[in-house]
Length: 110
Length: 111
Image (cartoon, chains in turn purple, blue):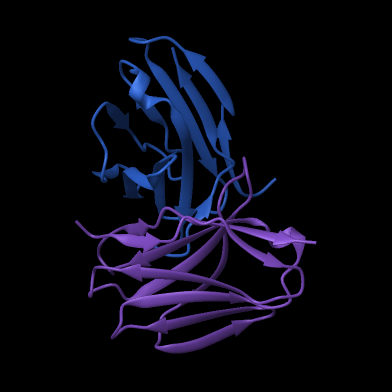
């Protein structure tokens, strides 16, 4: 059974701090990784994706991938209360379907 | 408006009834997906479709039927609803089986 694991949280950080969200995956064939944000009662929305080992930055968000350790992370710099949401990690093995993690709930405290 | 829509947004039904959830996208994306989201389980794939008239099972297909006669529509039918099918259902589309874009969801309650 291919799995993506995330700490369910809640992860609480003060406003302005860096939030670090982590994800591990079991399928070594996974080649692309996605982070979605989901506000309560809403649908998931794509934040960013990463294919290559290393870091990928987009505004306040940085995705990090380490395929050897089967580890993906999302860093949110200068966290804002509006970042409070559940963050879903997904892994994709080409030719197969997405596998989503259960999500980590982030709370940014004013 | 362009995008992906789902209807109804909320549905209450009774055990044993047939229910159809609709999904419509205007992007002409090839791929469409149906997920259910339950506390503790995250998003689980029910069915997906690579193109019109091509569908395939996901992780949890039992009790569900799909069809895709047109590229833009991907209805999901619960043939005989059960309480365990109470969930939030999300439809998604993708141009190439990646970077999925989600609809607003349908909250289904089976009594």
